Length: 204
Image 1 (cartoon, rainbow, N blue to C red):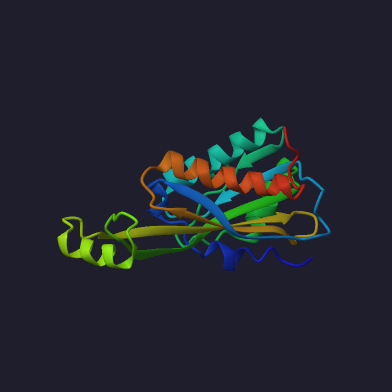
Image 2 (cartoon, one colour):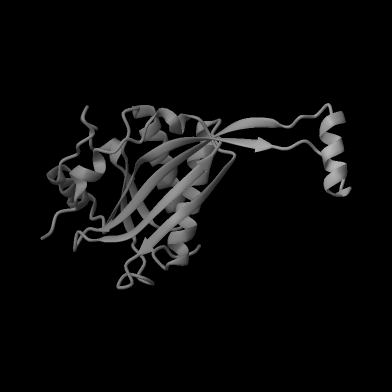
């Protein structure tokens, strides 16, 4: 059997940035194995890779709760697998758990990156053409402003336990995070909706 490629994946960091929260989350990239499209999984081991144990518990517990609300069996890895300091979960540890709980899929979320972008908002002007705009720039007390926006990107991969193959992958982007509950809820919601759309989870 081919490996899950767990070590390379799990080395990535789902960091404390997630303890901020979101003003908006979307999936920027998704991929699904056509051979699995329309074939829903029914029992999932949920893994969040992070140095912060409280974030791991919160993310996995919420994910498990939302899956169970859809009638999908799920278990949090935080309840059964301690996260090592280097974040490298061994394949044998994961297989031992999936065999115990008879999971048919493993879903792993990790940090892809954090990016800050500076954006400019121009002064508000009436629609008077280019000269009116130019004149307004001279007289306006509203010079416009720059704002730094933060984009947090997470990667989530879903693996089939039997074949150990990747069957779904998605990258989420959360803009201007502020609180853990909303951030986690939004990320999980967009993931679940896309997996339902691809037929990997049955709609309730």
